[in-house]
Structure formats: structure tokens, C-alpha cells
Image 1 (cartoon, rainbow, N blue to C red):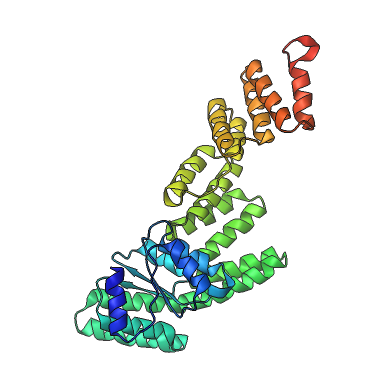
Image 2 (cartoon, rainbow, N blue to C red):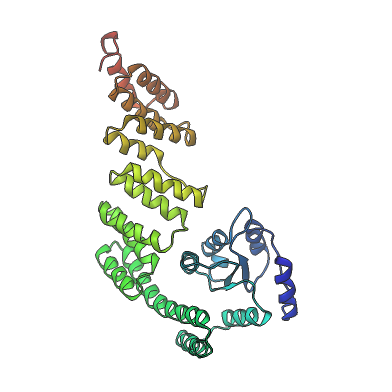
Length: 339
């Protein structure tokens, strides 16, 4: 498909066309060459299209570089994810050279927002009259999204200004307004979730993040954030399920199994806690705090020998770990394993 797209671009008069076989190579080329527009498949080897775009938007030199997805399948969750990441458009394959050229020109020479929306409305009306109901629906839906997105984006940025100045009440007001302007503006729900979590209001935080996940379910990092909030709110079982979903989307997603173990221990689910700590140790084998927490669980279930082993390992990693030494002294109080 890459060869076909290259040939189409050459046919349309675009002489300088760079290629990359996967997202990682594309990112390297972007750091080496001057590029006007990126056309990317959604599904790519090693680094997929959304991850490539997210990486570009975090880098100063490519933050505002126009980006368009070419995909065989478009769905509501993909549209939401593309918009959230800052894609400038998408084109469903197969497409004609005329469609591709029109889309590229619109991205590289964008009209004013209102002109763009008005043009989409006109095209939607023409499609409606010609019986192209799906085309009309797509055109009008995109027009609505652009109009609502711009208003919501401004309010979200105003919220971020206040949030960075520690005025979270004003930030929450702006985010609420953003959601009222565009009920599908996922960034506002995510930011509200983070603010509520920072405030210790985990119930509100989980509700906001769950709504964000409903709108845009393909973000592994957001799912992991939700899992962390659920752990903090004392819902470790649901948190673990959410984290598994995050790993399916993005295997590199990081999650604190140590915190999960603590939450399970609070609920007196000792075996679940030990399983969580075992997973945490596979990720951080030299973390003395995890060994200490495991020792606490073993003591809860009267397995003093296992607790001693964990405490000695914690002290081997960190000989100055005073809490572990005190607990070990209690385990061996008067020469007996008594606590």
C-alpha cells in the first residue's frame, strides 16, 4: 500500500516523497529531514500510527507538523483518538487521487475555521440532495466536531493556565464549560479526573476518567491512570482488570503493582496482595519497599519465616532500611519468632 500511495503522490505532482516502513523509522526520518506533511497508516509495525503522532506532538520540531491518517477502517473510537492526539485529518482507503489531493490541499492551506465549517455544511447538503447519506453524515459530523472542538480547546487551555497557577477551582470551571461545549472533548474529562485525583476525590476522579475512556478507549496510558485511581479508591479488583486492558493496547504501559498489593492487603485479600507484590518484584527486583510490604502480608497470615526472608532481602538491598530492621527485630524478639 505504501508503494501505491507513493505513486499516487508522484502522479499528483509531489516530487519529494520520503518513506518509512514503520513508526520508529518514521520518527528517525523526521528528526533528520525537513517534512511538510506526514501521511501514516493507523496500523504499523513496531510503533503504530497513533504512537508516532503522540511522539511527534511531544517534540518541539514536529509538534505542529500536519499529520493525516490513511486507514481501511474508521470508527468512533479511532476518530476520537485521532482528534485527541492532534491529527489534522484522515482518509478512508481505498481513495481516489482527487480525494487525496483535496484532503492534502485542505490540510496544507486551511481556510479559516468558520469558512471550513461552512464549506463542509455545503458539501453535506449537496451529498444529501444526491442521496449520499453516509457521505453527508460524515461531512456534517466532522463540521460539528471542528466547531465544537475549537471552542472546547480554548477553554481547556484556559483551564491549564489556571491549573499551573494552582487555581484548581477556576480550572475546573473552565473544564466544565469545555464539556458543555463539546460533550465528547476527552481531554477535559481526563484533566478533571487528574485534578480530582490530586485532591483525593477518587470517586469523582474515576467517573471522569471512565467517561474519557468511553469516548477514547484506545489510550493505554489513560487506562493505567484510571487503574491507579481505582487502586487509591480501594477497588483493586477492577483496577487490575483495567490495567490488563491497558497492557493489551500498549504493552509498555507502566502500573504500580506495589500499590495494588497495598490495596489488596487493606481489603484483607492476602493471596491477591502477595501475587501483586510478586509481579512488582519481577519489574523491580531490587526494590526494598516491596520486600517490606510482602513481609507485612506474611505476618498477617502468620507466615513468620517467609516474613523474615523478605525482611532480610530488603535489608540486603538497603542495609540502612530502619523500618525493616525494626520489624525484623520484632519477629526475632527474645530469640523467638514472635510479633
